[in-house]
Image (cartoon, rainbow, N blue to C red):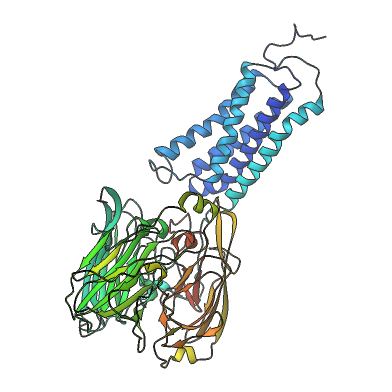
Length: 634
């Protein structure tokens, strides 16, 4: 008979509550092992040694856990503590200075929900194992129900954390997604380029993307400035822009609002591979439409645009200038609540003399918050006309008093006015807001916005008591009617676009997933069209947020808002601002073959899944989005 005196010293005595420590540590370790095995396949694909590491750690943890439950010893407790702490140590190195081996040696990796949960479980388990090794439980009568009751919280916690972590791992970023896989007989987007003609005039530029210190802050810039240099080109000229990438990451150039061949659209993983660090690429297209446009990165857009990678593109008419005496581009940028104009945070001064006519080309590049609210600049001191939206002219525009012009991110408006005989004219920015969460109200609700303004001319301006109370411009009731062949045509394709959101785990992290027709990118089915068709989109916003829905490579004709047909001027835009719980009907002519992005231009929303593509029949792409290629358009 073995008594307490003769029992081997290395054995951990089976206790009443000592068992709680043992079984809790075992359950947490088994959960961590399952997480390691769940992520192993992706790591095997990315880098063989990493995949083998996770397979080995996960398998070893399962074997040792079974052993210690069957026969607890100090040596096994110490071995399991070491097995749990080893991956935690590797994780700390990989997330701080980067590992010396792997696909990107020496580059720190991002932190995900799965690895944080796994580390927490392993740290708790290792503490329990070390405690068991140092202070074995006292010999006592074993009561199974007490051990089970004491271990229940750990069992529930372990099960919940394991399920959440494995779910996050299984819903991680897709390894490879192709928006339109190549098949026999299809035309590659890479072949959809701008044909050359003899003696074609050219406007050439070089944009160098790099890290620059601006006002004491490291920014990502084109040619060292934020915004990047304004590119002015002439209608009908071939535009040739060389992008030189001196950034630490890959990037692209997208020509927002410009109708051009699909190969030049600049969307990583759809129309090209992102341009790697240290390399360059050249974009070429003919500037067929005069108007106000802009350019920005379309690789990791949510991060790169916010860091400073954007600038204005103006296509002047063939005469070279507009009819106005002054022609200024006014680019609003920054973040919601802290807006700059043309790089100036407070007040931008522009020259204008009494009696001169002035055109202001307003471009909204402000990165909004989750509510997606638009900027709504208002002009005071002179009556004005909105002569163009998204670069396209309005017919017989009316004269307006102080009126806020709402612009979702990416939208543009050209306003024209005559300077008064005395005094200055001001453009004052205001902001519209959608749904505000409790957390936003708690931490940011009392903070007044810091918004920039523009002053033109000299002397005082007649500022209304509160610019935010000026009426909103209504594009559906403005100007005079005119012929719009697309709006009058019977559509060949009618598609509903339902915008919604719900909490879920996506790309390995919990987020407020934003959906189109119930799915988040890359799982949103594309809209398939054939060249020559008229396509009608019925857009329904089921959220309390704003969504500026932007279509690449095409012009949208506005048909109706909330079921009421528009009156006045035809409206031709490339982004439609869909307000909270609104419906909009728009149509376009499928006259530009390719694979084209259609997405919300609130970068947070697009990054959370509100993106799909318009796919032409017979067109495919050799490019892919996802972790394998590193092409991440949003």
